[in-house]
Length: 217
Image (spheres, rainbow, N blue to C red):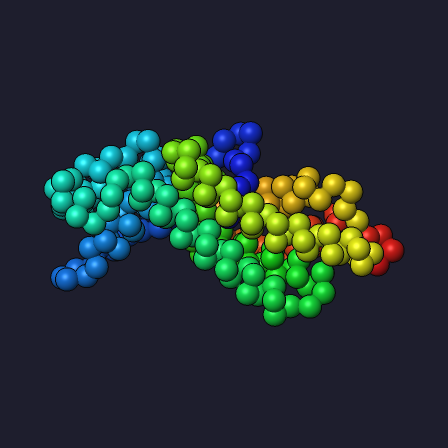
């Protein structure tokens, strides 16, 4: 989302009932079924603790049959992370192109990031916790997507600084600080609690703008 790193006090993924999986019936897409179950298991049990045998048992398939639908467990993790980050990046870029002004763009960025943290929570957890599980080539590709995403925020902050609207001394530190705050949402926020997502977005936007807005604006 992220890549942002987990906080020093390593948070634990949520319990599986937080994102229940309903297995498709009949002739539903078997590959999508495998993806959904793998996502669920990777997110709440940890990638290293889940084997293809475990995934097969969950959906009633022989482990060897899974290879008719995927290359390997590693390729499956990479595919899940890549698809999530590409969708996040494309969505942010599209919305930013439709928005004028650094302050408004920053609000759009914050709102979009929180939206993905909440609506795609298992993916967000994988992004924060399982980059380390990728092989080197896959890790480099995911890191490039994360760098592209960080650059979107960095460009907003630099433009706001040039316009005298934002006070940012070190853009890279500001980017990592903002993303660290926003990416923690997947670990602790739950719909139906004391705040809804709109209230959460409003409060975090207020905090971020309060920290970055130039005092003369």
